[in-house]
Image (tube, rainbow, N blue to C red; front, side, top):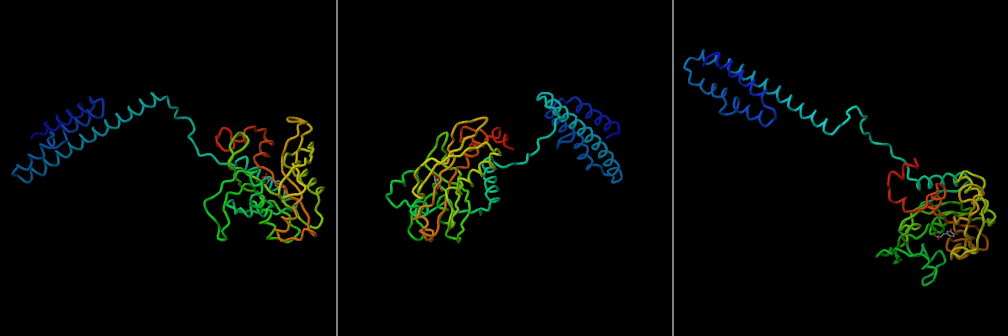
Length: 341
Ligand code: DAH
């Protein structure tokens, strides 16, 4: 084995590598020199037959230097081919590597949740507590305590999701159809004056452009010795003006029926100027708390009197922003939601 042989092999390998124009050819060429039966490997194998230890040592060192040189050439070519491939891909996809990267955006509150917070803030500022209650209710709280005894036709005013279960006292369980059960649940924990709101999720078997099976309501309740419809009108009108941030709002009470209030009224509102001006818009159910409900709260109907109201949070949001299809709130399309950030 001669020095010039090794030099020739290194030069041959360098040439072969730089002639390889793709990684597969390059790896095949590598095998020709460094593989199990490759040229340099053969040299090393033959070295074992050399009888002189000194010669074995010096020849071994020379072969290893040559091997090293071949490896360096191989790795350089590997890198070149990888760079070529990357450049080719960048050119093909026309990627502009100077564009800013994608970063994860900051979230924000859903428009209906913004309304929820707004409503809490406004009522809190005029002395109302904020209460929270269960979404899975007994039919007692959802209907019976609210003056809709079993078989009362008013029960079918709302299509109810019943659960196939009962509570420990054998009462049927359901998804609450309104936040009104909070009138009784909340008031029972308090002593008059009872003054609070209870926002929350509610459920009905309903689905179209103005109804969703899940929607949000806020219940309001104020009971004391002398709370009248005039107080309701004052509080609710004040709320609407703060909520819509405008003072050109007219409010009217339209006689209606709810089992848990007597008398009952729909609250309608009207803007004097701008969009929707002059049109009465239904905004909330309301009424004077029925004596039977006061009784179920544990209060003497001869001593206490007050009002309740129940308003839809989606409805308030739709009117505030001029959204006309309720379903957009539940589709969670970011192009829609981003408008409310
Ligand atoms: N719970 C009624 C509903 O969901 C709304 C309502 C009406 C609530 C009158 C009240 C009220 O508190 O007084 O349709």
